[in-house]
Image 1 (cartoon, rainbow, N blue to C red):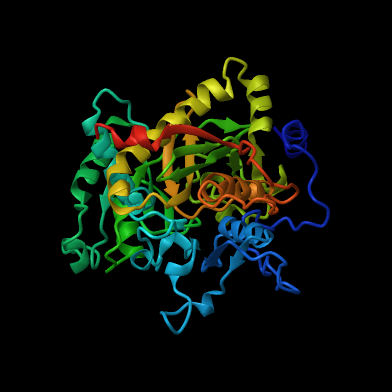
Image 2 (spheres, helix red, strand yellow; image 1 turned 90 degrees about the vertical axis):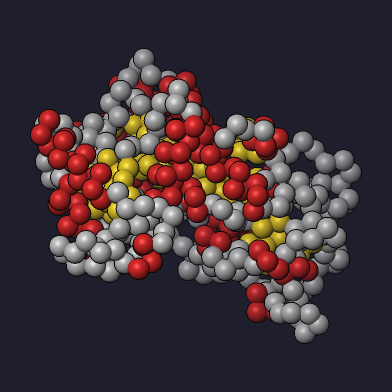
Length: 455
């Protein structure tokens, strides 16, 4: 298919023309450069009932949550610089809501909570078991051992620590005492067996703490993979997840894609799935014989936005669920998005959170919640594979404000209802009895059900 006919075919699914004046390299996940909350001209006529502090300038979603709360007269924002210890200043204990630093790093978990006050924080302790790639691999391996009748839903993954230098058998000191064991020898044996049998032997090496596409490399063969890890991270104590590359990916008009969906975990209510998701497409056609082309194989936006062909076929390299449904109806008429695709997504999210729930329940109070970005890939048999879980996910510009408002509805308004006569969500009054909350999250499993899980 040539470039002109490919672009013509895309018009059926693009969902509209590109925004006028937008740069071809403008990332739909870019962090806002300007503050979203200008200073108030004067104090509100109503005495604020609740207070929040936002100490995260990175997450666009939680920044938007803060901006939406700022627009409500019954919420007061406490500047981070005003925080201190009593009696000299405001304490975290005085805040009803804490929007913590990105990934929860430095979150004041030890300074909040208590029987006298309801407090909410937007990160969950123990999330690392899901959001660190090597930890996730071990978590799901343990889940499958405890549930042998379940089919694996994440690619085969090995945990490898980099050597100090080429040819050395010694691990970094920090790695020797780590919870995750080094699986280099088992990986090399697996790769050698695959080579002898002539079956797929392409792997993706992912640094466990990497984000936004950093520290990811597609490599063919076992020793080549280990050599890359040792050279790129020599002396590091960071675990590397070596994940089997899905070599028969489902394509959209010749282009590889992954699917990002958002799951919300609320310790009091349960696990929710956002009803809209996005397919993130590559900028170059799928080229299985050219593993060095990141624009063909790695669909992360932070990588793809550097391609000269980014946004040339579809705006932002993004296809949303309605467009994907039309694509499936035209090219795969026997496949239904809801029945055949999203049913797998729901199951895999529930299994992942169920596996981590004992640790989440032990470490968090009922006022905690967190939004996660789940990334999936589908093979040509329409089987879904969970690639990773992001603990501080970005969202497409089209969905960001809606997701933020729905988080407020579910996780914040449920604890801090608008007072009678106060302005509620932007655009409406909430006086008297509160209306049934409207949002775009679907409850997958309740917290009460997770509390009695057998894992």
